[in-house]
Image 1 (tube, one colour):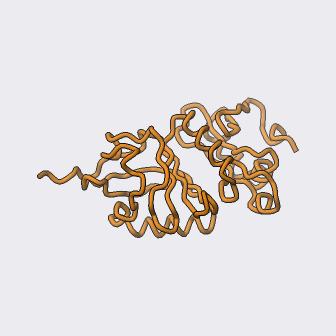
Image 2 (cartoon, rainbow, N blue to C red):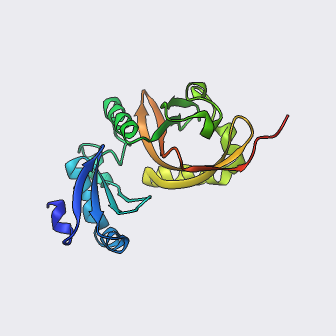
Image 3 (cartoon, rainbow, N blue to C red):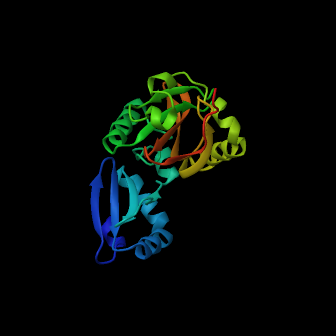
Length: 214
């Protein structure tokens, strides 16, 4: 079934990066579609091999449609919104698409919490360190300031394999405490390791407590 069969008049469909954006006339219509056709759209996402985002003019947090887990596990193409079964080349494509969209991407081992990859959009103004300095960093050091949310994230990824728009706090390497918003994806095999892949907009953070002086 074509995606357009789900859409009332006035909607647009545009491919952007690695996703297909369904653009509603307003937020109300976007919410109605998301609530009423999410499961059907999830199957469609698996069939076409692309993430679906329901958005509207002025939207800063679109509704993301996850693919049907059954379709991915039974040998379908793993869509970009579900990286659990993606191979290394699919992950590289995802990294390239997100960099093109202007997003920060960080790959962290889900077993050791060591940082395995950070793209060049993570700047010291946000994280104190440069992207290169985070390679090999143990992120559990930063999560200790918000361990309940860390455990919540691990549980969400184990259950759903994605955690869109997840809000949490970290202690930066300089000691400042910051609040962040990140969409996380679980991947079972990144160079032999299970990882969580975090995608963030550079502006989605705020400093809650500055770094100690001296």
